[in-house]
Length: 331
Image (tube, rainbow, N blue to C red):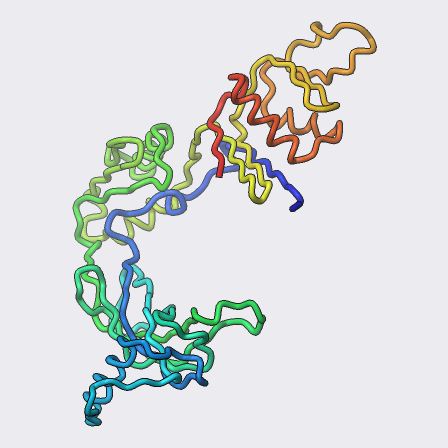
């Protein structure tokens, strides 16, 4: 059986755990775009597609465009494979910049090792071509168990058109929090207004903050955003325990609290309550003060030899009994 592990996440201290706004929020309109294309990889050593119709048609059309017409319009070769090519177009991408692309076999090819991707247009969701890819496919590892039908072409695509964006003259910007939370949104707006010296930011909901461009930053939207992104915020979060039973990982947030409770699990006994509740010198129940956190509980259980597997069962039982105050997420 796989060995189990557990982790503790502590601290939302106001001075220790402040993070930059750029790490917890995004500026509306600044994002990556997905690109996709259909292509052919050639030069394989007999590991390509067999009698796959779409691969044969693709090779026939390609040769036709190169001036080599075929009678049937089909070309079968185990040295070629049909592939799907994907890439992420970054924000503010400019024409001529390179992109890494991922190449995935579409047919029954057994390996793309040693192949070369032929020129492949990459389109966005609006069907417009934003990049063109071509180059040698790398599987990225010499291990035996590597997925040989998926590879990469580092810097294999060239961006063909700029992404139209103009942030310098905007009158308003919108921030969206990665993890929406009303308290975090309110803190962010307060901190931004303090930095800009006026009421320019307002929290619209738990995940949205609108910012009006101050007069002093007109025409300097990039500098404004640089200032805002560098502001440090103390994000809040819900009390939560995340359990991954497959890997045996338990992640416990600092704010998770437990009520008065006595529990027994095998030869383990723990009681959360007042010290005066203890009865008898031979009582083997481990005591924790009222208001103890789950972190205190875990430390106590560690001292008496609890295993992470037992910890998972204990936390699930405590949640069922209503003694664990926080969300319990099972992955």
